[in-house]
Image (cartoon, rainbow, N blue to C red; front, side, top):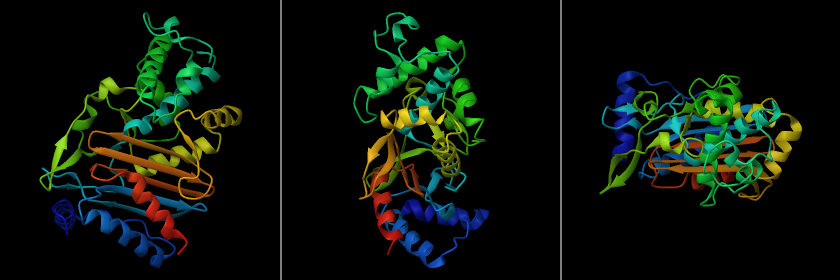
Length: 301
């Protein structure tokens, strides 16, 4: 067992950490658990995994430590920074303002932020989330929204998505949220040991400052794809244009998916028909997408 996983196991025994929700298929849950354990046991994963299929919760479990120094284990309720996956929230918040006529897609950034590029909101939204210029564009979108509404972008996101979906473990980090015990610290491996890393989260507002839990993200996806956050027409336009999302077949079938990275964190979400896979991790020694691919492959064995 790895140092990272062993620390969590000892604390879980002493504190009585919550057990994962029971799956309808114990054999499937055990198979999925063995896959994640193989990653966690070799210091390639620390975080939480949730899988829902056909409206049924198939798997919901956490591994490793949220705070290695304090010996706090990750739990299914732990919040993780999701890095550039934050763009999906920003896109919803901006399009909510468009639907409520506070902004228009053909507005330009320099109308609201002096000295900003003469780029339309639609152009900024449409930059693929993994393109180098996407981060700057989404950070600019947050500044545009703040100027248009005279409110912080955190408040705007709360009103557009987080509060309406009851995402109590989700928010935007202004630089102080990382100190909360419910939010996992980010780690990298240094000489085989986890080393905590930090980021200037406030400077990443709009592009990479969000944190969430696996359950909160599931609620968000259910509401988003159920057309409860924005209208069906807006949602279809948003996904068709790639506003914060990828559309393709990462694991052999047509799906919507998004990935995120930040110092010490990696995240991946997949919506493939009736299947939802969410992987959030606070040890960036392996991409969350690689683990998700192995889990999806195991579902139909």
